Image (tube, rainbow, N blue to C red):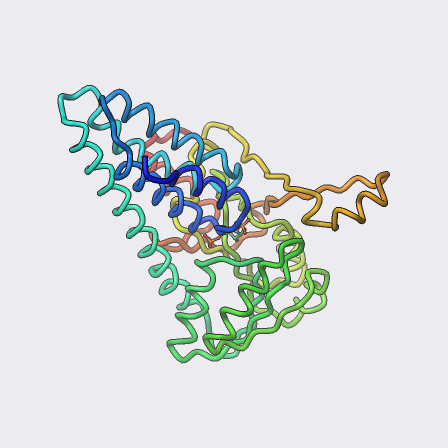
Length: 314
Ligand code: RI2
């Protein structure tokens, strides 16, 4: 075995060295690809069980972004198609590598397509607020900017990990007019805002959006001031298990992302909570922009049923 691509991807995803729902999906798939290329499998049984436990390990790195299990399941399904057939294990491994390449390419293409679809929603003079850092959102804003549209962006800092700085820095480097604001200033600036644009880690069957903590507060304020609320997400962020009533698990991270360890040691009577995501109800969402088109939150169930091949129920 050369290195440990799965173990190292697991650690990078868990520690958020690799972050963002799309990026973690591609990192997991890329690790499974390396596993297929690097591992030596004496028997087909070894291949299937090894790949399956590698996939389960990667899925466990972060619990909320459904892009991660969806991506891993895509790869495992590609392997399962050959299970039980008399196909040489090397050939199956090659097919799985091709499936991994297909996933990565279509993920990147999906983000680009969302960029094009979303850019059509931006008009000259628009003021847009975003929260956290999303590749899908950045794709829309840079596509609109590259098309010559003139607009301004307010990016919230996004405590406790300040992903808003990543957004602001990336947009400024591309020449987009961007202003970084504290999360607590969202209501003050919302009066000027035409629409909010955020990414998603998971989208439930009822059109609820699971995204970075604070998103639902921004949505509430947008609702109050009648600013529209748009979500940009590739379809592998749709959560199929929510169709059968499963809830999306919300990740809780270390208290030391919120306060320094010495502070907490000095103030040991203080409890610290650090939920990484929250849920924005569909009533606060106007549109979900995917690579398959633009949907109202109530329409997402039909797309989900089509993509996940489940029978239509009432
Ligand atoms: P893209 C991020 O989660 C944010 O919540 C962001 O909105 C979402 O993933 C989608 O990201 P985190 O990994 O796939 O920072 O659009 O916890 O880049």
